[in-house]
Length: 106
Ligand code: FES
Image (tube, rainbow, N blue to C red; front, top):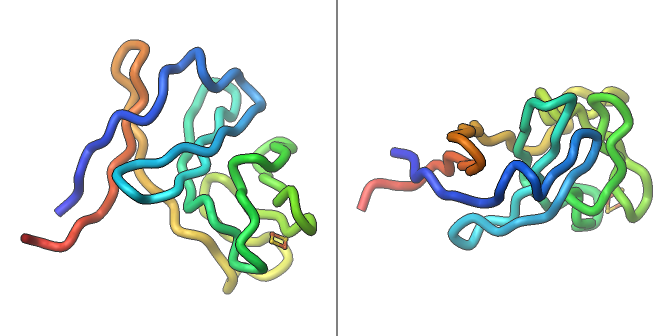
């Protein structure tokens, strides 16, 4: 089961940028890559850096703390694809951006 959560407006995330948002208790890095939106877990596996405050270089998101890099389409590190962060599906409806967060059945 997934929960669909409104997390931002399109105008909050200009092309080439990322923001940190919270979706029902889950930290999410939301990135705008040439008008397409991608959502990843906001916590860097290296030491917990906030990925949404990182730098977007093409489809690569660089962690602001020590520079580990992740592909925003896959969550994989180009240097080591075994290391990845969780990606979440994104839906855009007009000006609203939603993320789909997996939830255990109640
Ligand atoms: S916490 Fe992200 S690179 Fe160190």
